[in-house]
Length: 227
Image 1 (tube, rainbow, N blue to C red):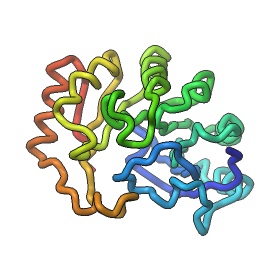
Image 2 (image 1 turned 180 degrees about the horizontal axis):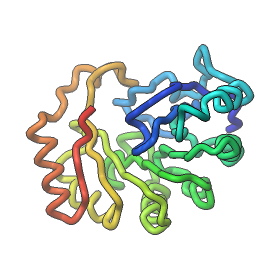
Image 3 (image 1 turned 90 degrees about the vertical axis):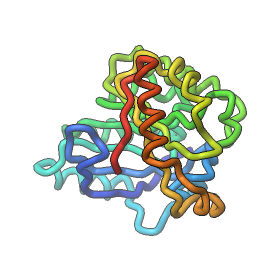
Image 4 (image 1 turned 120 degrees about the horizontal axis):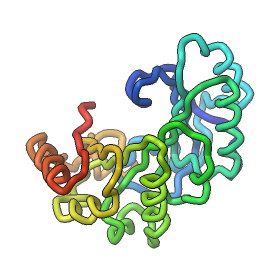
């Protein structure tokens, strides 16, 4: 998939740990998470208002005194064969780079010069069919590589009833043993890819807190993201 245009959030204080960052969104995703909050990016269609890469680079040139980093997210950025070129363009302006990924294209992660990686763990590998992936082996490979890479990283999961639950904790703990941090995100039943998920009741704060404590009891540095 060629990368021709991107969407942009000009400033974020919460998406790149320790950095004031811009967030660039790439179109297209190879998963079909029914609870996805960016449904307009899943199909690969270019949303209205997207910037060409040249326009994006002009933005970067003007913001060097304000921003310290750029987050590349999606959709799934690793679907784009020219992701390394996008990273090169951003790096040429002196920015640190954080990559958000679902881990399904591990060959695009390796040797990519980024400063931070955030990888989504959707559920236990054996249940990835719930989000549209028949073979979870690329996800397992990516998780193993990230942990061994030495690149600062986080793994994160949106805790959606029916997709992930208490029975998945031990399997996921085994998959990400040795990680820097594991983030439990609360599910928000709003603007979802599958409208039926807007009616789904999220886990309570007490339940999410209990899941987090169970991960920590298994040696995973887990915390709940408060946003």
